[in-house]
Each structure stands twice: as C-alpha cells, then as structure tokens.
Length: 220
Image (tube, rainbow, N blue to C red; front, top):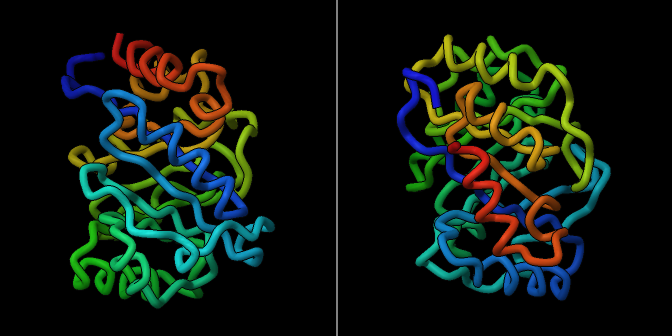
C-alpha cells in the first residue's frame, strides 16, 4: 500500500435510487453482503443535480449495526432532522451547493452540533485547495459529475486524491464515482480511505463477490 499508508482502504456500497421500492430492493442486496460496515445513500433534489432521488422522509429507520452516510447532492441543505431520525451517522454536503465558503463552514459546524460526522464533497471541476480551510470529518472527491450511477471515472482524479493527501495528511479521504475493478487499486494507492462503489457492486450478478474482490484489489 505504500509506506505512508498502512491502514486498509474500505469499500463502501452506494445506493442511488428514485423510488422507495427500488431503494428497498438495493438495500436488501447490500445489507446482506458479509463484511459491509458502511453504506452510502445518495440524495438528489433535481436542482443541484438533474436527478430527483428518493427523499429521506420516504425512508424507514435504518439498521443501526451499519454506519450510514447520506450524500446530499442537494442545493444548500439546511434541515437535517429527518436524517437523524432515520439513523444516518454521517452527512456529506457539497462545497458547490452553497453561496460561499462561509456558508459551507457554518453548515459543517451545524451538522457536527447535531451529533453527526460531517463530510464535505467537491465536484471534479472544483480545485482541491478549497478544502484546506474546511473542518470536516471526511473529505469526498468526486470521480464523476454527480447525479447518476454508472459513469466513467474522470482521469486526473487520482492526482486530486494525492494532492489532498499532501494538503491534509491526516484527513479521511473518500472517493465516489466511476470506481471499477481496474481503477480501485490506483484510487487506494493515491490515498483514499473510503472508496464508494455503486454499480460496481449493485450492478453485478453477485454483489457480495464483487464487494470482496474490490476490497482485495484495493488492498493488494
């Protein structure tokens, strides 16, 4: 894994769905995978991203044995109570979703005050250096333009991970979008701690096998 990084990269299945039925179907798939400790659920408002995804108020309480994180691809979200009721432990907001860096910082502080872990995400076109002054529990670099599953990984994303690792040596770095068997090791080697995989797991015939293989590839 390289000298500076002894800890294992963790594979995190993601669920991105438009309806409650489809969400529950995916949920039953991923929550049965042996070794899954964390699951990410994507939320989209149809404004910050084109996709209008399942809303948190349509969801039932989540299994507390799993660490649930909500990826809010939403314009300036402010009200987080429903996520708390549902059982989410980490909330990730987008840097680009707010009018200013000050608003982002205030939101991260508010999320922490409510007892969540706070994550901040940046889109592919946003410079990594904007994260330097952000106080978050984890930092998410998008490997695709957010909003839909199954896109190709944008070249140069691994350079952005490595850049962030230099700027914030002790940060928990997360990468989301376009993760496949053939790039998961590069992403881990560049410094990613949490690697989000959507269609690379739930889109496969055997999701448990896909999860296990991604984990092995990332940490070989």
